[in-house]
Amino acid sequence: MPVPLEQRLHKGAGVRGLDLPRVRETDFGRRPHVRPEDDEWVVLAKVVWQVEQAVLRVTNDEKNRVILRYAYNTPRDGALNAKWLGDRLELLAARRGKGWAAFTTNKVVGRLTARVGRLLAGDPPPPPATRLAELVEAERDYGRTGVGRPRIEVDGDHLTNLIDAWNTSRRDEIEHWLERWTLHFEVEDGYVATVRTDGAGEFLCVFTSADRLAEYRRSVAGSGGAAVAATGEHVLRLLTRSPGVGLVVDPVVGGTGSTYWTAEEVARRWADEEWA
Image (cartoon, rainbow, N blue to C red):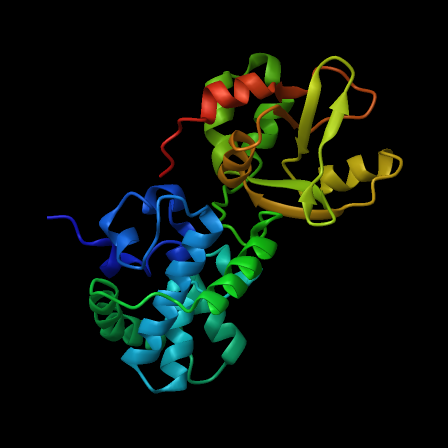
């Protein structure tokens, strides 16, 4: 029998790894008062609030509360949110030092998350409207650039090598790794920066390394945005919700043959993707 989501919500990427649109359609989503019309930021805010309230009810020990927040990945923290459970506890140990070893904090997680899960599986009250509005705005501002979304790091330069050898690489293999790679791109005033081309439409330019993005920024006049990074999966999700925007990987100013997908190709390939 499958383990209920409430009992495994702390695993993997925690609340930051939820398929937010799908949460609206589940029993788990209905218990924290998620509605069909809620957008993903409202869904996330409601789930985070319920988890935080459950943590407060489960333990009065402030140290244990901190451990559980790291376990469930509730803080808006770019360095934390990118990691899975074991790595989050290691980060907590590195930040807090003596008495916070991952071996020790993991025992707290094992002892208390079942109780948190039982509270989440009950009938918790909805968050106050004013507090919910504050949380939604904070999550929207934080998530707008994609920073803080779960990342899946792939060792080595496999994708970069595939891009460089585009003419001999299989397109489906590149797409497979693209979803799992950390991609680097620009944001301006909190929004993802795109470029508009004559005749070909609008594109988001992403890069397979921070160095490649930096080289591109040096060669483009007026590139005043901020450099950020997010998992390819998150970038592709964003594009499928942005009709008319295609994707270019590792563009070279003045060069030819960049790896790209038109807006139509992005929608056709990834709009109906069932992400793991």
